[in-house]
Length: 437
Ligand code: LLP
Image (cartoon, rainbow, N blue to C red; front, top):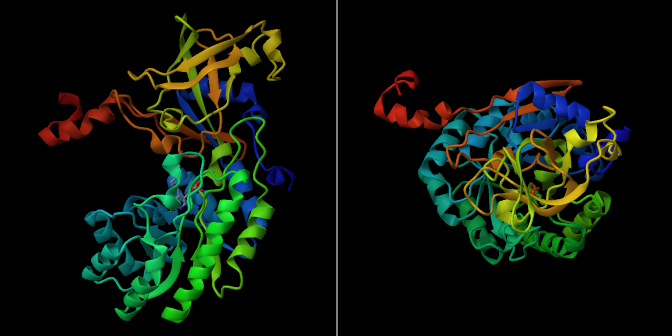
C-alpha cells in the first residue's frame, strides 16, 4: 500500500498536536513508537529482498511490542544476548526463528542458551571465536552453528560502529574454513557464515558494502566445499536511514540487487539482519523545556531528556532532527508547520541541552529553531533505533516511559521508572524493603 512504499518518515511528517497530547497524557520525557510504521518498514524490506531470510536485530529496539509486531509480520530475530533471546521467545518466536550472535559471551549467557536449546533444538548459535565453539562443546552443545567472520572491511555512520573492521568481532575470514571444518569434525551442525560490515551504511558507502558481500560470497564457496554445503550466508544489517531532512534514503532495490550480484552463484540462502531500518523513523522522543537562558555565546534550551535518555548525539555526534511542537500548535491551534509563524516565534540558533552533569549532554548546538519557552514540548526525531535501548540511569535518573501507537490508539508499553526502581538493587542487597529505605 501507499504508506508502506514511502521510504522514509521524516520528523516533519508527524502530527504536532497529536504528539503534544501524548505528553499531556503520559508525561515527559516520553518515547513514542508507531508500530504501523514498523510494519511498513518490514514490508518494504521484504519487497526489496523477496528471497532472503529477514531477521530483525533486536538490539535496535527490544521492546516486546516491536518484537511481536515484527515476528507476526514474518521476521526472525537476531539476538545479541541471552536476555534478548529470552525476549524473542516471550514474543512468540520459536528456536528456528532465532539466531543468537555470541560476542565474547559471558558464561551465564552460554549456560542459559544451552538450556534453552534443549527445548528449542532449531536455535542457531553464531560464534565469533574458536573459544566460543570450545565453550559450547564443553556444555554439550552440538546444534546449529554459524561462524561470524571478520571481513576486514568496515562501513557505517561513525568509526565506533564500523564492526566489519573491528578486531573484537569475528574470526579473521582467512581462518574460517579451518575453524568450521574442525567444528564439523567435532559434530556441530555447521549451517552458515555471518558478518556485519557496520551500522548506518549510507548510499555513498555502497561500494564498500558490495566488496564486503563479494568476499562473503567467495568465502561461502570455500566453506561449503570444506563442510559439505551451507544453508545460509548472513551478511548482517547496517542499512542506513536519513536523519537529516535533506538526506536521500538508500535505494533498497539497488542494494538488494548489488547484494545478490556480489554474492554470485553461491548455493546458500541469503540472510539479512537489519535493526535500525525497521524502527528508526517509527520513533520520536518528546521532551519538555524547563530552562531558557542566554549563555555566553549561545542560547541554551534546557530540557528534561538528556544523554541518559538518548545517547546517540553525545556518543557519535549523531544528528537528530528537532521540532518545537508547542510553537507549531500555538496560536490558531493547527498542527501545520507554518503555524510557527502564527505563534509569532522568532527563529533563534540554540543549543538544546539535558540535565546531566556532562558538557557533552547536548542534542544539538546552535540549531535554528523557533525561540523556545519554558514548558514547550520538543520532539526529537529518528529516536526509534538505539534510543531507549542505550538509555541508562547515570545521575540516578530513571529511564522514561515508552508508548506505542497501534490501531489508531496510544498505549503505555513500558512505564516510567522511579528513583525507587533505580535504588532497589541496593536495598535488596541489604535485605530491606522499598518502604523501609
Ligand atoms: N547484526 C549485528 C551482528 C550487529 O552487530 C548489528 C549492529 C546489526 C545486525 C544491526 O545493525 P543495523 O541494521 O541496526 O545498523 N548504537 C549504534 C549502532 C550500533 C550497532 C551495532 N551492531 C547507533 O546508535 O548508531
